Image (cartoon, rainbow, N blue to C red):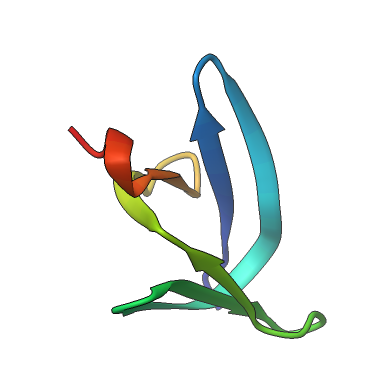
Length: 67
């Protein structure tokens, strides 16, 4: 099974939102992430900036910063 970490990048820092994520859904209201051992979490008003398959990380940014 392949799992990935999801981080939120704000300015020059990154905040770990969830480790070992098994599911990521893009919804109109935000992105929902879930893992085997945590309740699903909705992260509102964000966009995917980058997915690094080698390092196993998804980087999210506030939707207004998605450029």
